[in-house]
Length: 166
Image 1 (cartoon, helix red, strand yellow):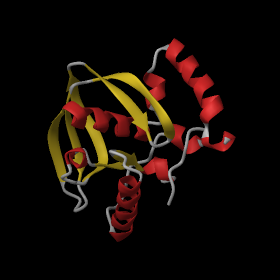
Image 2: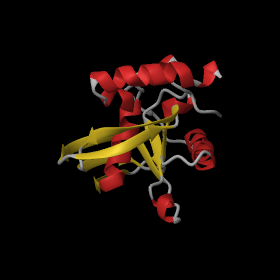
Image 3: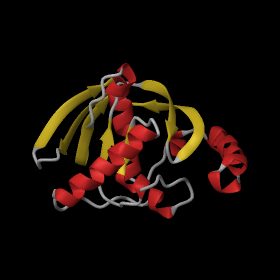
């Protein structure tokens, strides 16, 4: 399993809903978690590893040295409010960071690995990371949320720094 980078069309596809939570999905999530921790990411969406389905994992707590893997299957944003800005990066765009405007508070719904629906309020980095990963499932990358000028500067940066150009 490897992380797909910008340029691969799967990153721009809207992911399809997960139809069954089974052992195969659990194994995929374990492999994704191993990869995410190995590369020190805070989150990883299924389409970033070539699986066009609506699920992602996150672990914000690892920043404090207390790993706690969170799984979101078929997630939905019920409501969002407030504003915040965060310097985001993405495992699919290695080495690039930019300030992105996000909602500061979310109310979300998703399913866990046991197939149980849950709702949660997310704030701070939790809310930011959720929105970033959720965007992946919609075929949106954080660079799409940059101003036109910053997007042009990014394109020049990517032309020089894309993994395939090295």
